[in-house]
Image 1 (spheres, rainbow, N blue to C red):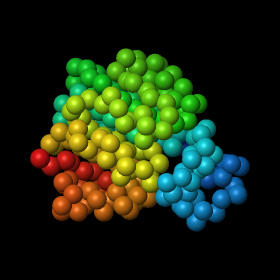
Image 2 (cartoon, one colour):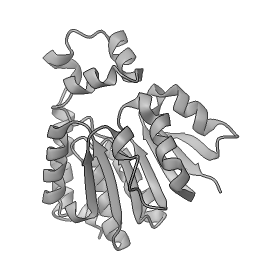
Image 3 (cartoon, rainbow, N blue to C red):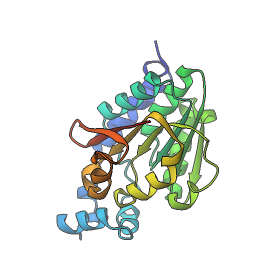
Image 4 (cartoon, one colour):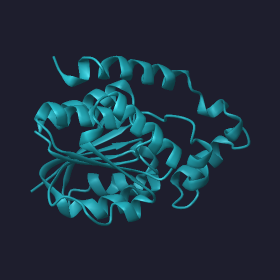
Length: 221
């Protein structure tokens, strides 16, 4: 038995994933005036994402169940003690990572979210899952919140915020990634510069696509 598969976390995740499945951001009035092309442009823009994610503040935008399980397994398998997450949202991915820390015997998860209402929802979910003691939620622009006070060694980095910022967030964290550390980038196809970097033979990573929308990378020595 694991924290992930027992009460209180298992039923909480079932409810959160069900709520995410029922949500339809594309049908939201806040998105109705945006074409598919405009949504993609905002997704890839270094400034436009603020408008896009502001429109989506009431939606979980969660990782898939498959990706959640992957995060837990990677963090458990590498014995993670220090994890950084970019893009908390409602905290579904955060719950998976924090569960792994609990089952590894403890640790610290730093997660950052620029939308205050989402940070509040994540904090409530982590409290309900009895995992908040392992998590530090930093509110604000990740380019600032992750600029200081990071652990010397990081075992796993999750990128699941504004896709255009993936390369810059990696810049902030990369020097602290230990050899063998994992970097998981959700919806990485929306960050072509990031993909080019981690897939380059000279980039310092071994990288491969996972499922439909995740890039899984390992930091080399």
